[in-house]
Image (cartoon, rainbow, N blue to C red; front, side, top):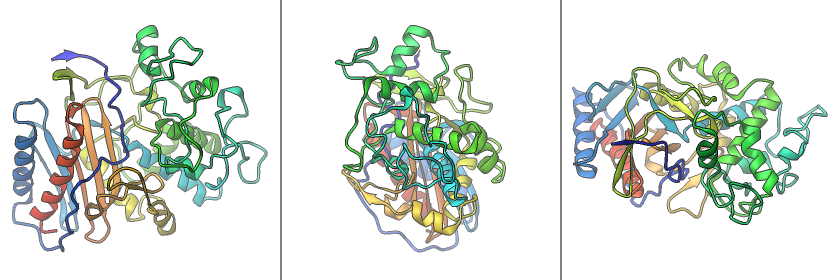
Length: 400
């Protein structure tokens, strides 16, 4: 396999991969005598059907009222193995915003040009670098729902008509090609691409348009309101209190290697396989740079959705207030996806090397994290469906 840092075109593509079949949730019962063996059968069968001749593998962590269980098709994989969980980062960002809302330090119904409550300080710097189109009309809540119309620097090429050396190109790729792969991207830099070129993704509130850059703006708001870096705020408010000691948010270009132990990631594009484990993810602050483990990620979603991660029940209910989107079987709230319904609320994440889905169902009290160490850009929708089906079969195998 070749080592490559690209393509980024398949990075963090959607909030939730379309689910084309909706199965009724089963009632809970006691798990089988050997739950890990049952889960191993599920992931092995699913992986054989999806990728019988491809590298990588499938892993799952399930937490039920009876305990936490892990299984994998990968030799040596454990619930403590590190991987990249991509856009599940957005749940931490949304939780940070909502925690500040809960404390009265911001109001998600404010527009981006407004001042923080009780201060003369704006949510975003009043500088040309943050003069994005419709700044005085986009609300914080619209950013959370991907309805702000913010141009997505992460997933879209800058228009060829832009007066910039990267016109017609993906900005991050252009920077790494011209300045090197160790470049540290900043929130100011990424938002500045939108501001300096007056790029527009759509009108505020008009429609659901997934935007990583919208979440870059949310991360900047967290920093402006809290006085801490995004990584430090999340560390202090969520990682430490919830015992997520194996989760981190690399925000500099030098930190490219995953902590040991880790699972190797592979990407397939145009029939070619690329080794894509280690890479610069400083472009992903607030939107897709999380490094975690199956156990940590499952515990995060479980505690968050149960109202045990620092946010109260009222705040969680507001986050789960999902609206339908133009994507099939996808509804989205404040940093949370609510489909497939039978799996509960959560989020997906796709990045070169890894594809993840994480869900918690409050009815059965079951949390499921499923991820593949192969991002199959040639058949991404089928891979996403396979993750969902694995989660469904895992619940059934454990009696739920």
